[in-house]
Amino acid sequence: MDGRQQDQQQTHHATTVVEQGRFCLARCTCGWRGPARRARSRARTDAEEHVDAA
Image (cartoon, rainbow, N blue to C red; front, side, top):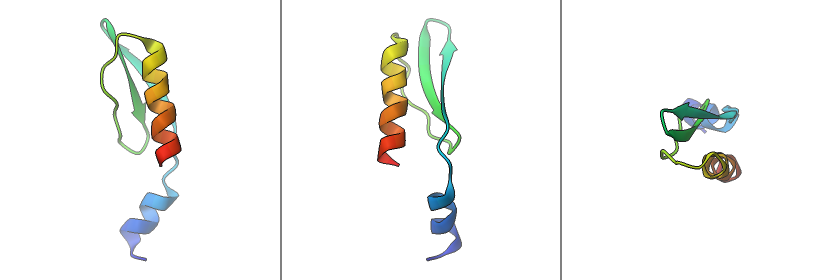
């Protein structure tokens, strides 16, 4: 396993939901960013799905 793969495996996924005007989006400490959503609940679901997939 090379250094890049080890870094990806050790990345801790801490997500937050950020409001930008009328939209919310989920962001992760790994650099991932979800699509803009009008519903906070959908942005939270995007974040949960990202963590589960990681």
